[in-house]
Length: 299
Image (cartoon, rainbow, N blue to C red; front, top):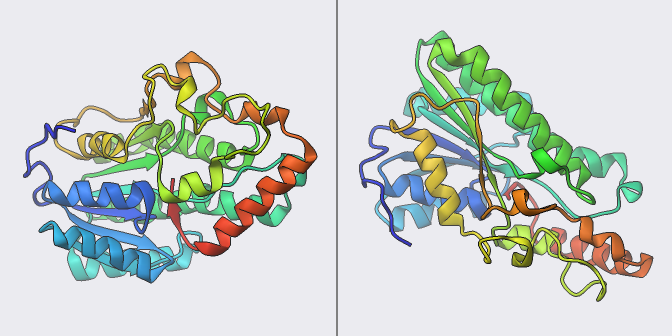
């Protein structure tokens, strides 16, 4: 797809991308670096982070990796202190770390609920405030972009912990935009529709389970644009929000979904047709996918 941005659009920027070892996080890191940003990626899987760094450097960009568990506020603060001290202050932050899976809510354990909400909600809060405190104390401007979903407006059956956590980050986005505007800190979000990535499709695409089920959020059938989105299309909106082209834009969540959430439920409501046997097969499939790829992901 055409790239309308100047290759120097983010020159002298330093941006942290959490969940940068895979999925949208990796694609965003590559796109930001291609436009001049020094990119830092956080996650729990060192090998995945190093693959992102290698991909960025292969394209002539600059990237650095830190192994940080965003669910741990002390680890986040220590990681942020190290980044600021060794490399200099951030100019931008992308909250991309995520966790999710499809399940009937009545089947969820408290541990499963915490696994999703601690990464998405608590992690986004810990990283945002760790950066924000430093920007405020040093009198520096900053820009935060969180990766949400259109579920923040519609809810999402069968992914309730994620819908709840993303809605909380949506509320944080609007709240901090007002609170921090006087500090010249902008806080926005991007809500992608169905965008195929290796992690998202492993855990969210129901595949062939339930032959009579209705279309769900991972399918293009319910998208007015008639197709899935691409990681590059999402990354371009993030790039815009982090750039000097959007100095007066704050507190907004921009949907990048081909009109899906306006046309009908862009959720997993179609899975209501699944039988108990279908759910057992789906749960087993999700467990296999999770065991094959553990750590922070970006969806």
